[in-house]
Figure 1 (spheres, rainbow, N blue to C red):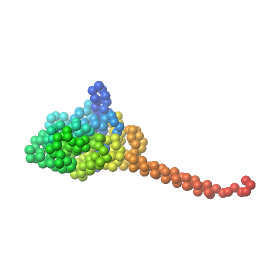
Figure 2 (cartoon, rainbow, N blue to C red):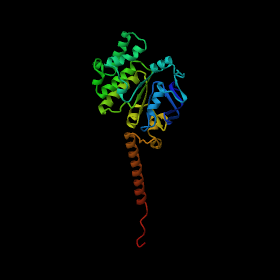
Figure 3 (cartoon, rainbow, N blue to C red):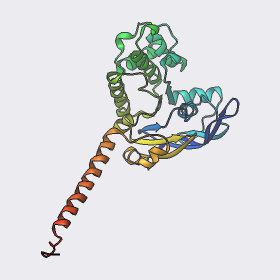
Figure 4 (tube, rainbow, N blue to C red):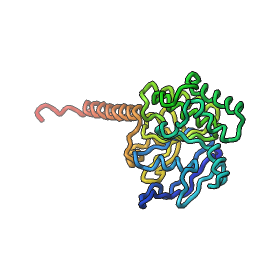
Length: 279
């Protein structure tokens, strides 16, 4: 059985005013896997990620990292953020330093690394994201796609075991999404566990190992991507449809079955004896 790197156990959380966001949520993340959390807007996906890296504290339940609780002390949260990184949907919520290099170096320097060690981490992260040439660029001068990659670079400079990404493809065009997925592929190949929220079933189909269907603050189903995304009933229950390629496959199969049925009916009709003349 795969080792679990992050577990959410019975998480419950309400926003001010008693607005429920999580309602007894359970989620298991296996080390080295790529997990897509799928669900409609407003289902609580972002709130879940904010719990998985310790930003929010649940009213009930707990989050385990490698089987243990890290706690909400200053030291506990620092260790938590080092091991579980988070990239927000809007990179402008995450980038704050004057230049890209300064922003990416912030986390490593806060870990107590020397400037030389932090510089090595920055160079490594920028190279991994393909934005080494942007090191000295002002963050407010970046395109949206460049900001996304800079935010991911800042997260991976901490060398987390788990990287959480909130709607990573949101706001990107097709080319930008392809470049981002290529980066995430490299991170996964290097052993980073990836958890990303999305309502894009096609992205989940092409990239995820596992899928968790999320609605109304709970995980409705979790399992292998190929199995969950082929479950039309489960997807419909959370307001989603199967990926395009799967849907085309379903329709082709249904049409083939219908065609065979018609062919069978034609053969059967041909075998009916012709009534004798006069009848």
